[in-house]
Image 1 (cartoon, one colour):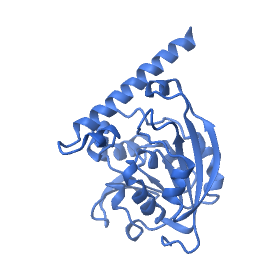
Image 2 (image 1 turned 45 degrees about the vertical axis):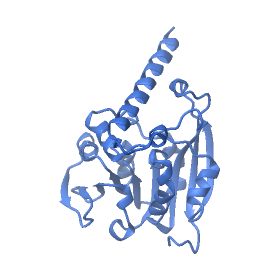
Image 3 (image 1 turned 90 degrees about the horizontal axis):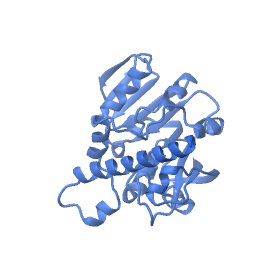
Length: 267
């Protein structure tokens, strides 16, 4: 009886998630957007910011992601600089900070960034960033720097390069038409010997169009293969009851390790 009740609750929650995502997408899509764009469920920066402003953030997790914990030593074995794209207020950053790493994130929502510092009781200040298209929020000890702005404006000249990148919920949230550009920009932020842990999903894209978007191993190779050697670390069943409301009967989680190819144009 108890288990059945939780299944029902998850199904209701999933429908609310889907309906609200579609509401924000439709409300922030301009009148010139084609029907096909809306059918692909493309997310705009304004719709993303709207979800944060309305405190509709069911994707936020209160615990450190289990795949980061599982593959942490593969990703980085010594204190270093770690980049977290589309970071929101993920507690993964606090965990990495506590391990002695310097953490840099990019997030469009100022509200998400401020909440990260306040909820983790990290003193911070807002600076005029040298990166003119971003606002910088920085911990007073200088170990956490979060930039408010568009990920597509990121570059190594301003952010520097990183020993590691933890990509959970970023690549899969990017509109499919922008994923190749995203891969080029983010891999360019890696040091020559840096490592990139990518958390991705695989499901039947004809039944649900995202976000989060499905990415097969072939898709990942097409996006990142020109710049990186791609290794599939593991795949496991991530299917939850609410995925049924998306019309799905299968949902796989895949973790990839990316490392820059020698001679890559991004080096």
